[in-house]
Length: 475
Image (cartoon, rainbow, N blue to C red; front, side, top):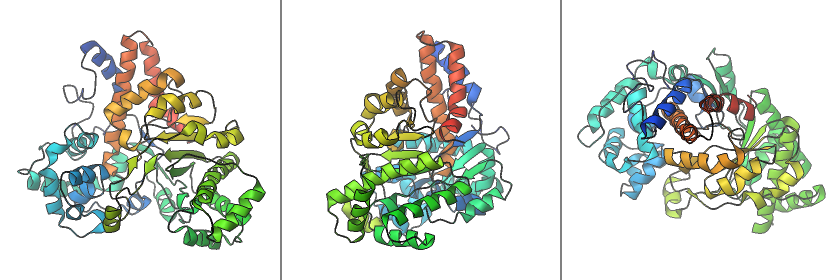
């Protein structure tokens, strides 16, 4: 995944036990997987959905220290440390001041906890293949590795823009507030950086009356667009901001929701409900109906303006009230729940599912829906695409289960391509490399079992890493 001129870092395509990581144990299947992987190992990275801040790229912001880079902001890491008795305070979660070296020691001394986990695999990959550090983490090596990582981060070659080029990123999408002026994206576009950094319209807080800041966000939206406080003015304001994003290169709008339930209603009913919402008199059921209706309206806008609509559903946020009070949101206690896409999205799909040009990409953390709901829906509706394994499922075994679950119903053409969905910038090549190895292994098994030919497998894997996400996300 790294270019061969990467400073001091081993190649991720090397031959041998490490080079064959994640490939099948059977020698004949492994050989086919290796050949398939080598076709695309160094293909450019297309990352149409992620959370790396545009400011990092625009201002080439240096990474401050190993703990903030690999521990403090990685919920996969902090949650498991917390489960093992480490106070989140000691890791710097929630912006709490902490000695980064001591936080790193807490992490390194418990490195054995991450054996077999996806986060352990990614961090090992980052340390070895990005940072060129081979030492195994432990209490004894903590300071040595900390100093080695810190020394790397001080080098110009490990600043974000240099890494962007080194990772061969062709497209990187950020996630942005609808009222963002996107000036960092302007700076990047004018800077001569190879590859594109695109904004993504993320309107959740402006669509959900249960959001604690909904009233102030709504006022800010209407004020920024000089629209009246009516439902029609509200819709016009959202359209205006979407147009602003499109002018700055956006190709998609993202919706992170707990329940993918949608509600269709007449314009008059929607106007009446909006006024009840604004007046603060809405019941929980009315607020849920408004949320569901706004997803239908967002699909309508996507039909009109062409933005790809992605839905990330099924996560219960801030499960631990005590943790939320101490550390704020996004502090590691968000959990998957069961979801119902078939019934939930039916009103939206009845209205817009057959619309020409609509791309609706569905991401789930309830993996039971892959074979039962999402793959069958994607094999009928031209608008529906299968989002790649996300969050708790973007791990080798879960990725393999995903391929087995969706392929027999929908094949390979109805997928989104791999989506890294990450803020952890250094993990981007590790995550994409993981997906490429898993796909190569899955295809190799189909070849060995006589279900597809090796030439067909090569064509499929070539498509998955680049052409497919470009098509689905209209790149």
